[in-house]
Amino acid sequence: MSTNSSVANSFVRDSRAGDRFHYCFAARRSLLLLDQNSGLERIVIEGDDSSGTNGEYSLDMTEVYRDGREYDKIKYQFKYSVERVNKPFTFSELKDTIVGFAENYESAVGQGKKLRYLVVSNRGVSKELKSCVETIAIGGESKGRTADSFLRNVRLRHDMLKAFCATLVFQDMEEDLEAQFQNLRVQSASYIAGIPTVDSMYA
Image (cartoon, rainbow, N blue to C red; front, side, top):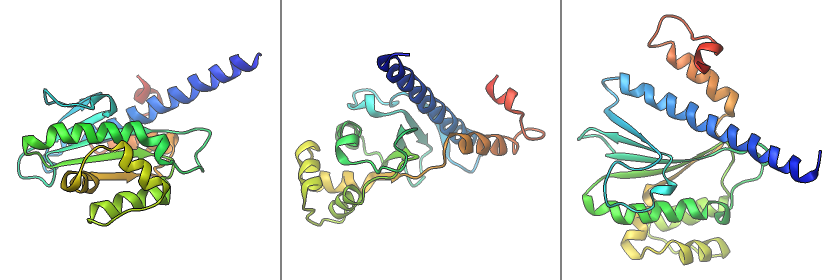
């Protein structure tokens, strides 16, 4: 097998694993639609449910909640890694996602919505990036190479930048694909008789 073919097959394998992670996580969250106390009203896959918003390419899933909940919308981007699980994400690797989130926030916040943005991954996120976002969110001045790159690319200013960073959450170090799948089986058992078989979950 040629090197190019090996690389292509690896890319396809990793992409499929990422898709399955997305599906499993979204399916687990979808079960909340069956819980009357969750407040979850609907789920939108691959985008937002509002017209006239930017940055939708960075939204893998949007949860829309009924009035009176802590958040009106929670917006997700899923990142699943097969090869580099133990290597934390740097800002450069998450730049497109975070910039897209910021663009979406800027266009949606005027609608008076309480928003939250999550990057969900089985990989960790670098301490530098987390510290940068957390410092800005509390009104501090973040410094260093990561902060410089963050501020250069996330083109929000002053109070809007602070408010956006307060909505941004890194839900990293999530369980791997197999664990997500097994958790989905167990959670599904709360709504049907018995734990679903593996075959039925793939059907």
